[in-house]
Image (cartoon, rainbow, N blue to C red; front, side):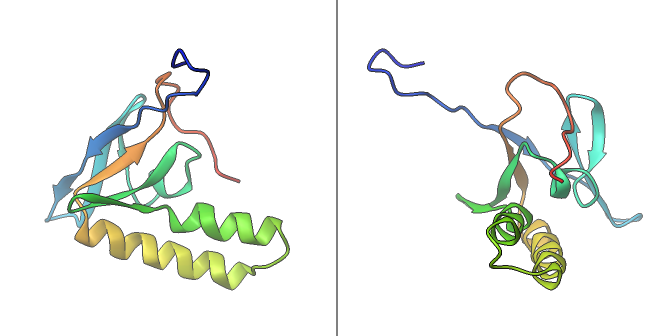
Length: 108
């Protein structure tokens, strides 16, 4: 915590490790190398994909928030997963808030 009472959030940047032969993208998670598409995409710690110098927010988290508010649908969640994969294709890292090194924590 910062002295004026504000909470300080530090994000880890987990660089992509691409395996072009297998078509896989992994990152070094607290629990070891994990698939970005099957683990990070559905992890509560994922804050987004680093594309260039900016962080694109996690589409799944945004879609899930809308569903919880009654403003979204399951179709939106599926579209968010496809958008996440597009961001991964263009990106170079995951922004992760797992400062305690707890590892994967299911989004839903």
